[in-house]
Image (tube, rainbow, N blue to C red; front, side):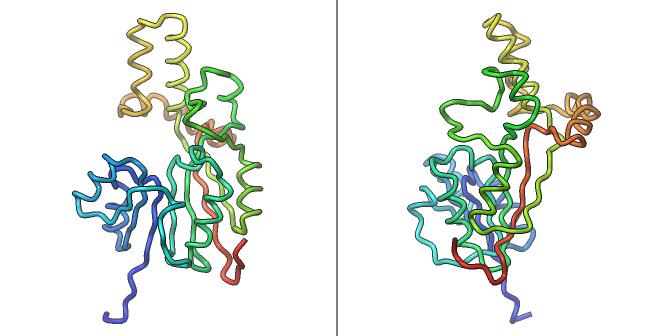
Length: 221
């Protein structure tokens, strides 16, 4: 129909744009922000609308998007509060923010300590628990906050690899396990599935998926 208005989605840290492609295929007008010159160029070469830079330097009018996404990004930014407030202002009233982060409040962080795979100092500047991220989102004005524990044990495999490599730097097993989080195999995911489901069910997942909504009649925080 002629009066159809295509909904708009924004992804920060979009890399080469795989999620943007999925959003376009689902009927969204998708825009990405990516600080890396090479991945941003790859996304643009594929015809995607991608700004190379940071959210702070990207000039966009407020209340432009129905959806904003940030997959494993918030832990990297210098000021998570500022980033979340900027995303809030870019969302239309009633708009949805979805993102993922490591879960520093789960058993993995305490068990593996300095070998926890997603500790990643200094690339990861901040770590959150379910309570701290819920509190921060509320302070930024969001409501209807929902937190899901992912059925994913990639952190555990990566952490085991770091433990093995700390004791035996040349270990072939350690090197193989370290590649798994970025290149998971179907066989390994199938093998880990029962434990992954159990850990998520008891709310101890190492990775969280979070959604939150800007109130329909909300004010800028």
